[in-house]
Amino acid sequence: MSRIVTLGAATQDIYLLDRDDFAGVELSQELSIFGEMQVGDKIDIDHVHFDVGGGGTNSATTFARFGHETIFIGSLGRDASGDAVLECLDHENIDNSYINYVDTHTDCSVVLLDVRNAERTILAYRGASKYSTALDPDDLESIQPDWLYATGLRGDMHKLLHFFEKAHEVGAKVMFNPGPEELKENTKLIGLLELTDVLLVNKEEAAQIVPGTILTELTTRLHNYCPIVLITDGIMGAIATNGKETYRLSVYEQERVRDRTGAGDAFGSGFLAKHADGAKFKEALLYAAANASKVTQHYGAKQGIMTGTEVLHPMTIQEVKENNK
Image 1 (cartoon, rainbow, N blue to C red):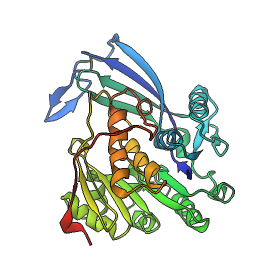
Image 2: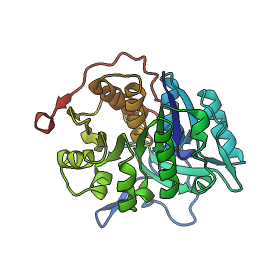
Image 3: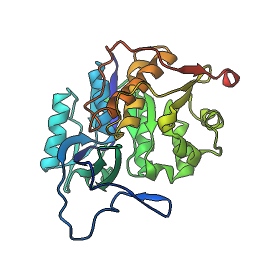
Image 4: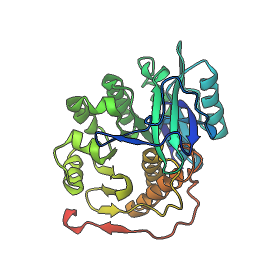
């Protein structure tokens, strides 16, 4: 068992599920989920589902369920959504004593989901998570974690740098899943990658950081900065390298895709949950893929998260020999 700190957002997620009113309409080769709605309409929704999301709490849930001592660091408002987050953390046995409370509302997302094909549009309110200045990297001194799992801090590169430096100062390793705002700060992001032990991005994000369009070249170039690189590619699976082994993964078996929200968080945290316990690289990747797949078979980012005790069936994981060193 390891002690893992997650750093990032916590949100109240409200799912509006419907079979016909969210039908997409193609406009200039782009899908508009609001195509069937008129301004002023009152739409009857088939079902509503409440959940807790955010990269910080999603990853924390995986670590806690896999048996790791887990601490969440992030910002909340003192409101009903914040209470929902706290209830979730308590239920999952995640330490919430390092939460920063701010005088605004907790983040909230409304997910409009077409249940026929799992297509969705997310209306996101960025509230408490924007206030990262009060988050204190010195908390890592008292926590003494083995790992810091960092997601985005709405572009606060200065704060992330301090957390990464403090993590290494106390002997912790860093896994990083940068958000959209961090990806806009390429020069500063490269600096953070040099303090990162494991990097998680999707293919489009990888191409924002380094040149390239092919997964193998993106992986090789990112490995120049980070010892371990994980790049997801939606239904095409993923690629991963630790410098000695490089694997191309398919998608783990999916009975039915209901909602892709949180799949990336599940992949990254599923990998680290096993890697932190000393699992072989290939085995940790298998749990990463399976955790992501299980999450997509449920509504919300947490219901399908595994416990690490499941017996997994084999899947296609192909070693990329020419990338080995």
